[in-house]
Image (cartoon, rainbow, N blue to C red; front, side):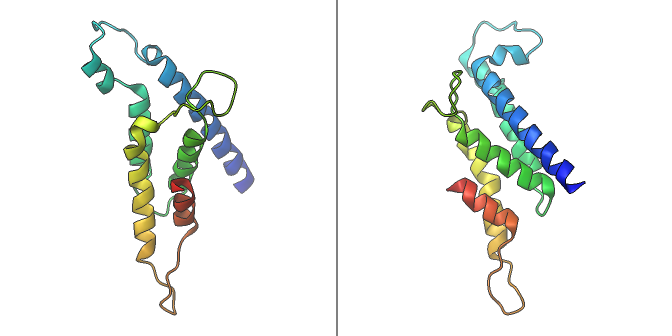
Length: 138
C-alpha cells in the first residue's frame, strides 16, 4: 500500500509539473471565457500558475502531514524544470521564478518548526520533512 502511495505521489508530481508548464505558456487555456481587453493588471490576478502555487502553499501549511512532503517534492520539481516549451529539462528560463515567495514561505516555516524540536538529550532533532525542506531551499 505504501508503494502505491509513492507511485501515486510521483505521478501527481509529474502531472502537476507538466500542467504548470502549460499554465505558464498558455494561461488563457485555463479560463472558460476571456472577455478582457488584455489588461496587464488583471493578467497578474488571473494567472493560473500563481493560483496553483498559492494553493499548494496553503496545502503545505499544516505540519507533519504526508501532503506537506509531497508539496515540497512538487516545489523541487517545479524549480528543477525550466519554463521553456522545448523538450529539455532545463532551458535556462525559470518556471516559478516570479513566484518564489509562494514556495519559500512554507519551506522556511517547516525549517523553523524543526528548530524548536529537541530529543531526550536536548539535542536538535530534525524531521524528514524539515530535511526535505532544506534540500529544496538549496
